[in-house]
Amino acid sequence: MKLSVVIPVYNSEANIASLIEKLQLALDEISFEIVLVNDGSRDNSERICTRLAKEFDNVRFISLRRNYGEFNAVMCGLNWTKGEFCVMIDDDFQNPPEEILKLVEVAEKGDFDVVYTYYSKKEHAVYRNLGSRLVNWITTYSIKKPKDLYLSSFKLIRKEVVDEIIKYQGPYPYIDGLIFRITKNIGTVQVLHKKREEGVSNYTWRKLISLFLNILFCYSSLPIRVFMPIGVGLFGLGFVLLTFLFCQWLIGPDPKGWQVVTAAMIFIGGIQCTLLSVLGEYIGKSFMAQSGQPQYVIKYNSGND
Image (cartoon, rainbow, N blue to C red; front, top):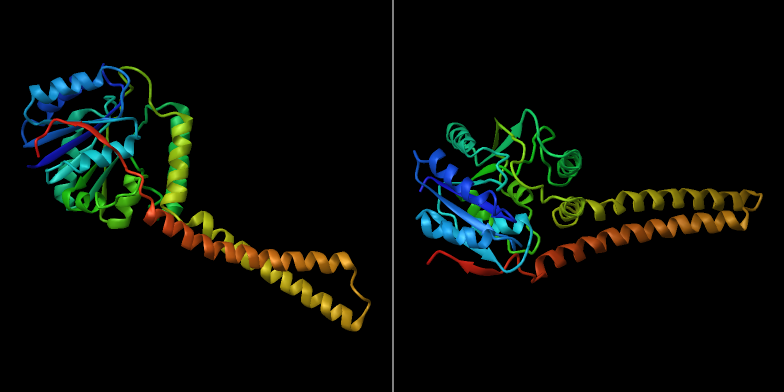
């Protein structure tokens, strides 16, 4: 099979049937499958997706028991893909289905493992664009992403890379973070970005902040490692001050008590920050390795395999 299209579904009763029909038309020249993952929708999305899976032979539907988040839903879908390439696309029609063929073409011509999309004009809300810039900034320093690369949710991943991604069993998957652990062979392509046809974005400030913290604490040691230069700096400053005060004590006049106490506190604080950084590295790695929280729990799977 050439292509697998993974679609996380959340409160999409107005869009999902039309999206599947347009995908069938746009991709009819290649062999493909569609994997729908209902992420605990509160509307009739589950019923509609169940009908679509029965109507189309190339549609698989998986329903999760509750809302786990977009990345968890995508991870679930990736576990059931069979295509040579896997494309992730949202259910809101902001990315036209026919643009998928551009990603496949670029991946084949450039022999890329991953192809990200970018837009000449983004039709997101202002707060969403600000959130994207914040995520772009933190990922540049935490997962070593190139500064000029936009981490779009609409992207293509080669099956070999997908097979490595799904080996991750932690409860907080971040697809882009996992990609950069596996490969640097990445291409880009410009695609259209349209205004949302129905409803409102499911991204809120709360979800954007949660994503930011997920990247920062689950895919980077940056917060812990900040303590190391601070600790070393304080240690060095405290050592210099204590040495100066000791020399002053030897040659006079005697240093004041508050000066000695302050220098000692800086010196000890530096040692503590350094030790916290080292200890935090071990605790963080142990927590990420030992956490047994599931990524998702499947309620229903339309496939037999």
